Length: 247
Ligand SMILES: CCCCCCCC/C=C\CCCCCCCC(=O)N[C@@H](COP(=O)(O)O)[C@H](O)/C=C/CCCCCCCCCCCCC
Image 1 (cartoon, rainbow, N blue to C red):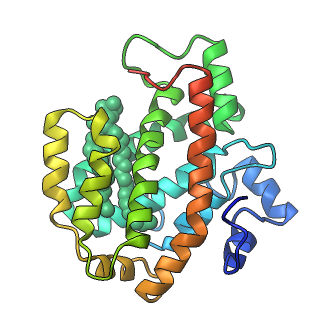
Image 2: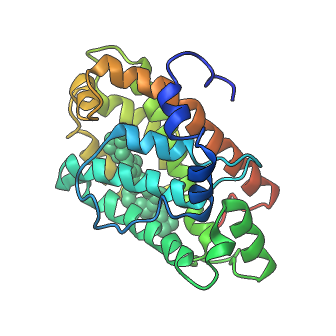
């Protein structure tokens, strides 16, 4: 993958995208990534989150749903560590994760193995409402997909920011340039207030449990190309099926 082949990505290759065949099979079947929301409560490791996203893209360039959800669950754990002011955001993310997880636990679980198979199945069976809000997998995942765009920009902002930059500024600038376009005024306002509670960039990076701020930055640099790839593949798929504006 472009940008991910440089030195220092061994941990990613080993643990994420470059799974040995046994683990690859487990990933494809979903067993490695499926766990309850209650599990691992409030512990956060940036490594785990990034490894989950690196494991998302299959050899056929399909996006696996289980590691995608595992990545989001890890992010929610991180958000919960930041304080109750972020609860309204994590609750919404959890609701969306659980909707898709329920499909993965249903009789139709195989149809929801990848984003591609989900789109194909839901469209072929008339399960996607193009006119009004629904709980379809396609519509729900679109919300997380838009948030992934913000995450990509936010992590890049953190990675390239100066030591003394304000996380709150990086967060609000990237939010305003992405996700905010889909949110009503009241949500934008509440998000803006919550962002003010974010710690400084270096404290923020140290909270990620991977060592120093410099080590966290290096890890972000290794992993971002994989997150971008997940975003790009999903964006192209949704564009191809005209699903990017689902209500
Ligand atoms: C790698 C570690 C560092 C990064 C840490 C980032 C942690 C972020 C964790 C979770 C992000 C939450 C994702 C939220 C998904 C929002 C989906 C959404 O857009 N929902 C809205 C629309 O839904 P429907 O009504 O159409 O169903 C919904 O209205 C939103 C409600 C909640 C507000 C969402 C604000 C999102 C702000 C972006 C996250 C900021 C987190 C800051 C922490 C650094």
